[in-house]
Structures are given as C-alpha cells and as structure tokens.
Amino acid sequence: MTKKQLKAALFDLDGVVFDTEPQYTVFWGSQCRLYHPEQPGLEHVIKGSTLDQIYGRWWTGELEKEREVVTARLNAFEAQMDFDYIAGFEQLITDLHAHGVKTAVVTSSNQPKMESVYRKRPEFKTLFDAILTSEDFAESKPSPDCYLRGAARFGVPPDECIVFEDSFNGLKSGRAAGMTVVGLATTNTEEAIRPFSDIQIADYTHINYNTLYKLWQDILSATSAK
Image (cartoon, rainbow, N blue to C red; front, top):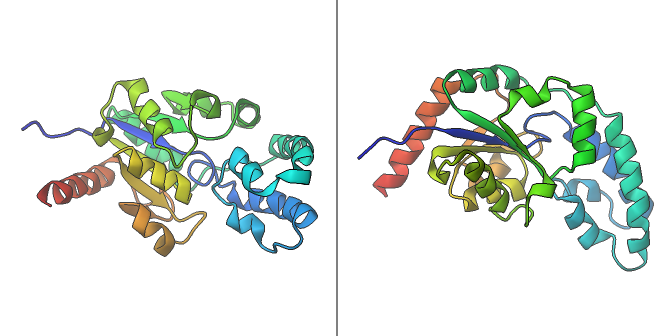
C-alpha cells in the first residue's frame, strides 16, 4: 500500500493566520450592547459564526432593518484593523512550501474584507497557492463544502490534507470533510477544542513541516488501526 503524502494545508483566516479575534470581540461587543443589552457577553457566544449566521440568529424581526447599518460599521472597522500574524505562522508556511505542500486560505470572510487584508499586507497573496472566500462556497461552516472545495482546487484527496482552525464551526467543517484537523487555542481553550480536533496548538512557534508530518502520520496510523 502506498504511503499517503501530506499534500495540502488549508487555513482559516481569523484566529488562525491573523491574531484578529480580540479586535472582533471589541467590535461585536459594542454592537451586542447596543442591540442586545439583555444578552451580556453575547460577543463571546457568536465567536466563530459567519455574518449570515449572526444575523440569522440575532438580527431578526425588527432588527433585520439594522443589518445594513451593522455591515457598514463592520466594513469600516475591518478597513482599519491590524492584521498581525499568529506567532510562527510565516515560518511554517515557508517550510510547508519548501516541502512541496500546497497552501490555501479557506475563509468565510468576503472580498471587501480581503481587500483590507491586501492593503495592509501586500505580501499576503504570495504566501498561498489559493485563496477561497465566502463567495466561493455554497454552504457555510460547519458544512464541509468549503474545505472539500479547497482540496479539489489542488486535485488532492481529503485524507492528504490538514486543516488549521480555531472556531467550533470551522473545526467541525474540517472533520466533516474527512481531513486531519489542527485546532488553534486562540479563540477557545485547548480543552474546549480538543473533542473537535486531532492536534491542539497555541501558535506555530513549536511546529514545522517535520513535526507536523510525524503527528499527521501517527494520527493516520492510529485511525487505520481501529
């Protein structure tokens, strides 16, 4: 039997490539206090949800007419955000490329958000072989659709892909796609994400292609032995 090769690494964006989650907590905290003062801490409940999911659950009925206003505020906020990489990320991406691993961003962010990223980080596009955004998917996470499309972009089977995620919906999406899932404890605790991920890390400072490949092979071996 031919040994499987690690062919693609698929990354979510916020909380995985960029350390932006604390900034989003500030933004959504302000909006939740304005529109849902009866739900203290709601900004933490909606972490990892897409904008459509947030609106569909919390901006309904009379609040539906406020969606356009909130979206405009969000766009303005994202245009001035800081996009700092998670520690060790750039080194890991370089190492993956050096070993022939294809890389992609698979994010629920839309094109206006990505334009803000490109303005602040002109080198961003050069770090990835593909960038897939919300406009590329039929279904949002936790559906596996986005990650399956990421694998298909490279013509790679799901079991030769690794997903990097931080949110519960994203972790579930990677699992449902049949991929090995690395959970980053940037948005939720390591304990909280452990049931939904195969590997848990705080950042990328202690991981490179070789350590990742060994962990991945160990997981595949344990799975096939069951």
